Amino acid sequence: MRTLETKVWSPKDIGEAWEMKASIEDSAVFIAGGTFLQTKWEKGVPYPGHLINLGEIKEYNQIYFKMENHSPLLHIGAFVRLADCKNHPLINGSLVADAIGKIAAPAVRNVGTIGGNIANRIGDTIPTLLVLDAEVSYFDGEEVKRDLLENWLQRNEDSLLLEVMIPERKTPFHYHQFSKKVGRREAFTASVVTIAGAFSIDNNKVSFIRLAAGGGETVPRRLKRTEKLVNYKIVDTVQPQLVYQEIISEYAPVSDAFYAEDYRRKVAANLFMVEWEKWREKHG
Image 1 (tube, rainbow, N blue to C red):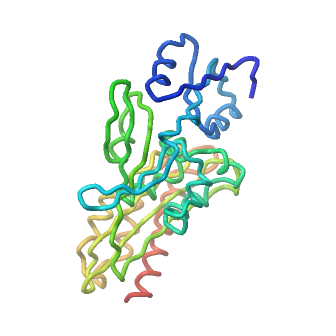
Image 2 (cartoon, one colour):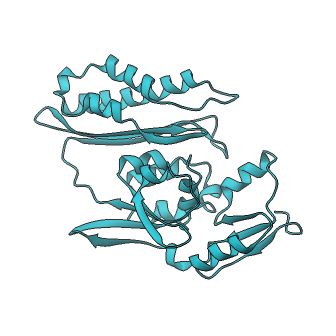
Image 3 (cartoon, helix red, strand yellow):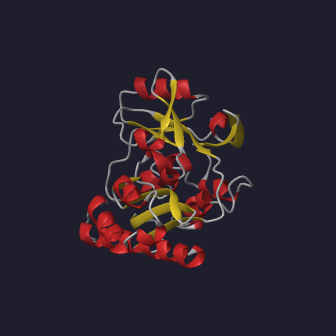
C-alpha cells in the first residue's frame, strides 16, 4: 500500500467511523480486509486519500447465536475474517463454510472479511446467503436498520454493513443444498458463475426451493420464476428442459471480456440441473 499517499484512520465505533468519512474532504473509503479494494487498484483505480479501518471495532467482529421469536438466529459480524468465519464451530461444515472455501486462495481468506464480500454486492458468498434467507443489519448514518439481504442489495443509498443474520432451518430428510462456483482459475479473480440452491420433497412433492445466482460483476439475486416453476410440483411432473430454459431466461449475468452472457446462463442452468438429478437419484 502506498502509505506516503494514503492516510489510515482507526475509529473506535461505527458512529465515529461515519463522522470521519463525512468530515474528510478528500476521498475516503471504509476498509476492513481490503482485498476487494486491492482488485480495483490492480485495475488502475486511483488510491483513496484516506482509509477508514473498521477492523478494530470489536462489536462486529463476533459470531454467536441469539434467540429471536423462539428460534435461534446466527449472527456473523461484518468484520470477521473469511477464514475465521469458515472455521468457526458454529459455521464449519455448513453451506456458508462451503461457499467461503471457494473464495480465492487461503491467503486472501485470511485477510478478507465476510462483510467486505457482501458489501461489494458481487461477492461469492451472496448466492448462498440468499438461499438461506439471510438478513443484514446496517448503519445509514442515523440509526442501525435491518432488512433481508435481497432487499439491501437493491439499495443505492450509502450504508455501512454491520452483521449478517441467518435463521436456523429445520431440514427434512429429503433435503439437498449446494453452493457451486465456476472461475477462470483458483486465484484473486472474479468468478464466472456462482450459484446456490436448496430444495426438499414431502410426499413426492417439492415442498421447498430456493435458487440464487451471481458471478463476475453480476449482483446475485434469487431466481424466483424458476422457483415458482418447480415449487409444490409432483417431482415426476417437473420437466427438466423447462426448468433449464427458465434459468436461461431468468438469470441475467453481466458479460465481460472473457465470457459472454449466453455462456454464463448455460453454465448456471447446467450446474442446477446436475444438482437436481443428484437429488432425484438419491430420493426418487
